[in-house]
Image (tube, helix red, strand yellow):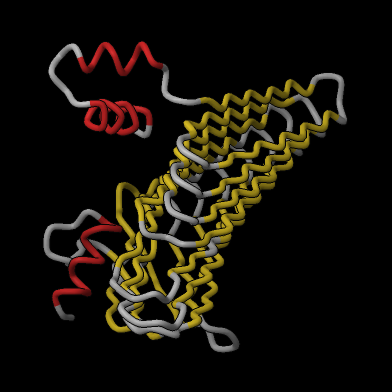
Length: 306
């Protein structure tokens, strides 16, 4: 790997040198380039479509799985299917994400479809980060799809972050939950220029006492546009809470479209949305401490997205 590759890996996985502990699979420009498995985690290349199957043995504890994707060629259109099979009572952390470096005029695109199948009592922390860079006029396009199927007493915590440099993204997340299963999602997005970002979230709470909590925080600046669409379906005694907060600046636009469907009298579903500009009193308070207006705005935005 060259310096561009390592820098992209650092951005999306927060490693110091682009190297990983535990199991991992690195994909570059549509091809797998490095892989490592462990005694508890197996990674197998799919035969019929592009992608991998990841198998985690029951009772595996505190292991890491890295599956980053990097694109450094202009004109790449990469589609990959990754399926995760998490054994009973396992507890693992999965770190994914994609970084695109595009210095030319053709668009570079990555569509990653990740499907998670958690057995009873399994717990997964899933982190995905998206990042774009490069001096070319070609767009950097990322369309992640996450499908989650949670069996009884399982838990999936998902952190999704769009760092910067992504021109267009449609982020789709779906979940189906059994009894006592829980799906927690935290999303952070920042757009500028004429960038576009859309989030589509849908979860079915089928099992008694299943629950989901979704928190989306975003900042839209300049002429960018964002959309947040959520749909929570409660089919039994369950709990769902969706919160969408956005800061808007300049000529940017933000749309929030909530949908909650209660098919049972004991389904408790809540949706909250707030969109607004940075409050003037916040700016004034920071500027009295010696910050310029731009520095104060950046401080507020960084704190909001933490």
